[in-house]
Amino acid sequence: GWNVLGKQFFKQGNPLKAWAVVSFDRGADIQLMQGFITYLVNTLKRNGMSVPTERPPLIGPINPAQGGSGTGGVNGAVFDALMSAGSAAFGAGGKTIAPQLIIVILPGRDPLLYEEVKRCAAINLKAPVPTQCLLASKLRSDRGLDQYANNVSMKIHAKLGGVTHTVPLQDLPGLTNRTMLVGADVSHPPSRGDNTIAPSIAATVSSKVADNNLYSATVRLQAGRQEIIEDLQGMMEAN
Image (cartoon, rainbow, N blue to C red; front, side, top):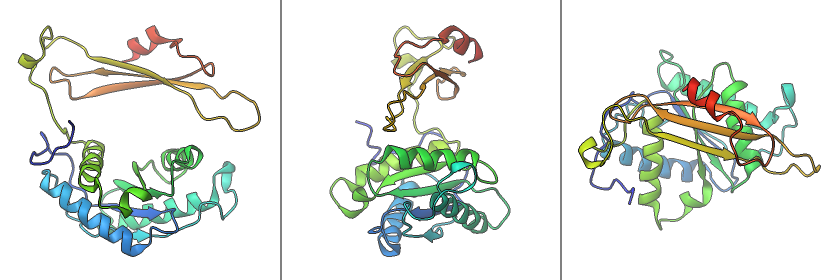
């Protein structure tokens, strides 16, 4: 499968210096966070990633239901926590580089909280900061922890500009160095309980280089609950 145990990433990304961790799960305290982060850092290093800051700042636990709404309807508790994490990450990087990553520990599979974290980190902070969300339940059990940490490490490595793996063209029958690989999907936001249908999100990705490890992406809003991509031609042209 995808477990990279015993292997290393294909191409290094940027060293992980400016990062922080924030917990929105009341049971994911400093001790639990530090234990998992130590395990994750060892996994990242074992897989070939440079991690100069091995002990990032830890924030929380914070109750995301408290704090009301911030500017523009943003969840105040989420905004304040991510702002604090961003500032702490900046400090962890020696105040010489922008925050590279905020790891966010979630109490469960809450689509609305996940959406709020991603939206806030992308558009409400001083500058966009990549986030990596984790489920608190995964951190509490040793069962499958190695596979989970390896999976998370691949996502972090890619967000830092690295290439996790590559497949030689000779192993892909019918493909040449002029073949474009394309992926497309439509996702549907959860119902908000007022019987309104939110727009669906269509996305496409297309390979840009012969090694098929660098992709451009295009995103469009379209009619809610519609699986067919309305502007596929325009999205492909944009790619």
